[in-house]
Amino acid sequence: MSKRIDGYDYSGFIDYDRPDLRTATLNTRIEWLKYRLKKVLIDPLDQVFPPSGQCYARVSEGDRTFNLCGVTLVACAIEGLGHFMTGQADENGASFKAWLIRYMPGWNGTTANGERIPDWLWDSARNGLAHQLTFKSGGTEPRGAGRFNLGQDQQIEMEPFVFYDEFKAGVTVFFQALQTNHTLRTNFENRFTVTLL
Image (tube, rainbow, N blue to C red; front, side):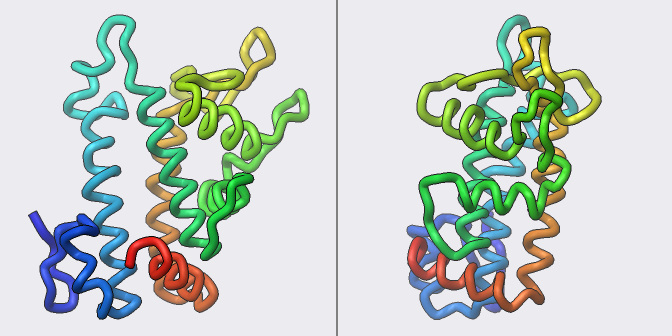
């Protein structure tokens, strides 16, 4: 399956699309990344991550869960989108936190014990899951309400399905902002050129 953008058929895979993307307009590049994100992340996750997904029951039956996989993928996507938002790479989570705060503002909070949620998501969720296959502290606890709670041990327990839904809403707003925000467009173009071309 491909998508026709400005007269070209794009697969959503950089190895195939790079020659045409090199001469593409900025709007085409934005549409391409939006298409790619939907094709390789959001559409597949919609099938397995939320309880309403067609394959959710098969991958989350018994004591199995897809929550950690889903949160890992979403957290890594937030970091990647943050780099497109800021136009730079960083290793301290600045781009991750900036994108999260701007496009998922409900996650810009502090717990009753003073822990900042963006810091926890970067350190414990994104880095813990990506580098040690587990949260550094806390975890996921699907409760069907709220974004996060403190567990009995005072560790943060995030609601993974709210996290995913609000990520998708943030993605929509991000791509809308790319249509008119000059600074954002410049940052996006710089990052796209450095990393994908």
